[in-house]
Image (cartoon, rainbow, N blue to C red):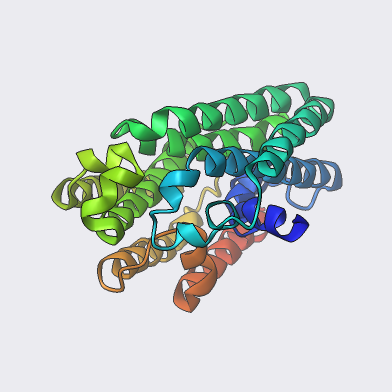
Length: 290
């Protein structure tokens, strides 16, 4: 039971919470012990809060997931885990994690609460509304980044909002496209909003968001006030371009894109691009620009 419960908590999706480290890195506090420890604690708390959301979401969708070609193998729809156990865990985790969030930092606690409530509303209501579903998913990523800024008490850069929102939209819309192809004529039975999407619409949305992401990130690299004055951050643009184009290649040519963590953690070229981008950012911020 514990093994199936842990699997339903989706630890493979915990890497999404790495957005919490965004503020720590870009305000140049990565190697400062107290902010680093507080951010790690915030990351752990968000992992548990997101797991509570997954438990609730899987209980809500248990019948629909039984009709899904891959989700039917999950512990809840396959009958390996009782819904009552998932409900109990989904209620207990936030009762522990949210008070701890407020103890860590009051404003961080407010953001954590906002994230949890937003995702719960998404699980019950918002995921069934076209466009609002992907916007809400994007809001979840933005709240993660905001939580990272709140926990170390630093101002939130407008670039954080813009770039995180666009990247999250890019991933969310790409996932909707994958679901639409995978489920075909049964898409509306799994998620009501999928009945309102078409491949041409999603492809146009992806094109718009991809272009906006590239433009926004490029503008950030030479106009944000906290970056090195020699504009060295512009050297990271090629890694972002490759990552976005590689993601498009994987969803359009290879038919992938079901869950972003599977792409980021299983595709070697994508992992190399992400690693080189992260390395370049740290070197430029902490050594070149120091």
